[in-house]
Amino acid sequence: MSALRLALVGLLLVGMSTALGVLVRDEVPALDARLNGYAPLHTRPLTFVAEWISFVLSPGLATITLLGLAVRSWLARDPLLFRIAVLLGLCWATVLVRYAYRRVRPIDFPKWSYPSGHVTAVTALAFTSVVACSWLAHRWLRTVVVLAVTAVVLTAASRVVLRMHWFTDTAGAVSAVVGVGLLAGLALGLVRPGVTSDRDRI
Image (cartoon, rainbow, N blue to C red; front, side, top):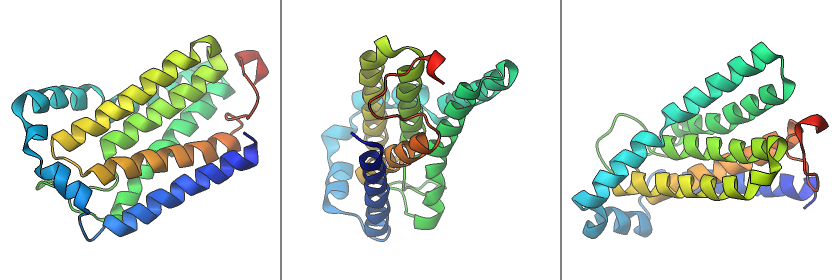
């Protein structure tokens, strides 16, 4: 896929997330209402697992990674790690649009709902990990992609099971992060269509 097509996909995903945010800001779609009210989805065994998933796959993990990348890139004067840190920061920053939508959560909670902070952080970390792997350890790329997708899906499911977010909050988060990630990755020279990159190709 060419750089232009990737950029268009990125813009499309950002546009989809924006449109979804506007649509759900003041009303709850039927799908969200059904999942939130589906009792078998919120039984104690599932919520127990969801609590642990949300604890492990949390914004704290992204914070530690971002700080680690920033410090490592500064100490080693490594431009690649610096660009990867910037990519992670830009992807994660998409959570700030929640202050524009101001959507109310399924439960009483003092933070806005759209997009999900947990899903934004984990998706940002997952996307950045895939990009970093394509540069630093290409032979592990498929494994990292599978792990990244699994982490995002588990995080999104856990937030819905715990009633901390509507389903559309998680979908909007993934769409925004991947869209911004593609655009930022292209701008930073980290996403290079048709190129399998190693560290010596910086």
